Image (cartoon, rainbow, N blue to C red):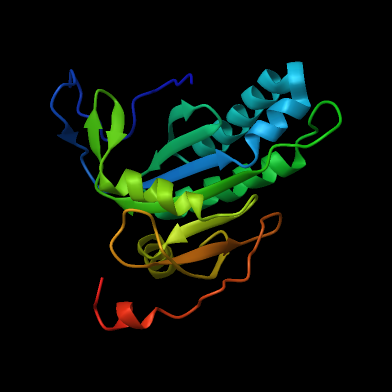
Length: 213
């Protein structure tokens, strides 16, 4: 599975790798993943590499326009870092709209992407962002549906307090995240062109309210 990497925001100049070095500040992490990519690859056949490359380019462009760093491709998944959660939200919305509006070549299914946004402390290991926040961000993304953008409560609070959000946030319910202690409260981005899902659980489970993991 091929991957390309680039230097992200806050990496220490001249850092040669080896021991992880903390990034200069807290960052917002945007993960994306193509839904049903195996079926898409089978249907697209020889044109799949062009579809995948264009999918990457559209997300990359949205990330860079919003001031983020497009750090990695991993198959049909992407990862980007932002200094500001509002910019991350803007990039995710613009990327989803670009993917929706793209005149994809040929007939058959088109790329549908889910996205997750989380914020936290990240470490730099040879140019690769690592840490609990990165792992949790990937798990949060996995809870999203095709065409949906979900964000952690941490990001939702930051965006709401800052004001001027590019889109409205709505409750996405409480989710049991694999390898995470206790349920996680998620929010979904409500904007033209994005999928919105009615949550099955909008209140915290009793054991969480009682403080039991």
